Image (cartoon, rainbow, N blue to C red; front, side, top):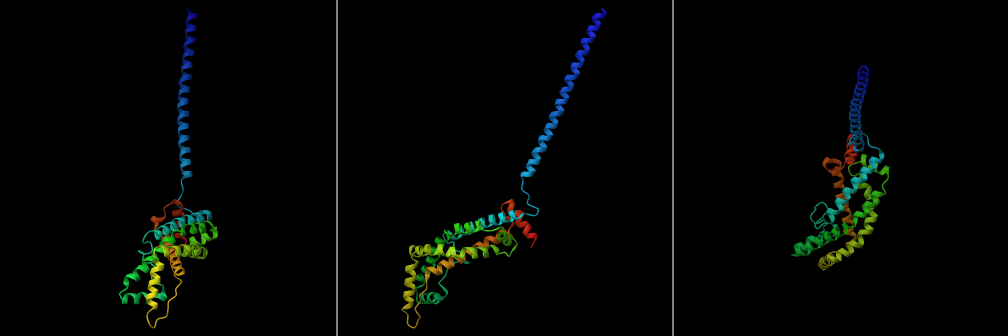
Length: 263
């Protein structure tokens, strides 16, 4: 009987030890799961923090260059799109092309003689030709942006409000003129400007006591179209510099925010 009790006690002890071990293992498993969950959560939080872009702090020179290029790509694209649309020039008093300065008297004389419609046709056709040419501007500006050095970008960022426009004038004017002139020539003929201009100057040159007018119309319109592009680009540049809502990316917010504090 004693032997049976001893056996029973031994089995009970083994059972209790196994149960305790199982419970301990279960608790250990729960702890490990909790630790793993915390670690995973921490890792996720760290990753999220790392991948987010701060809009504060001092930008690197690479940030500055990238932001300026990004801003100018946005600005020049908008400018070219606006001016190349119908009435992009004609409907914008800041860039609308009128008779050449030396031909203002032609405009006045024609209107005084009841030929205001002819004068209006000349002005409309000049602006339509410029709108055609503006379509060619975007790739030229994009090329100039790609060639921009970090020094150029930093000078533009911390420079005057028209620093980018000045840069474009310096590096794109000759290319724009080369590209615009043949387009202007074609457009002048297509929209009837050549005919209207010929009719207007022909009527004027017939008048007694006037000096015959011989304006290079295509060169004049090409130059005015280029001037209009720079005016529009300057307006877009000003928006990004002064209008917080125009800084559409975290990079623009960071870099131009830094520039605001350092001027």
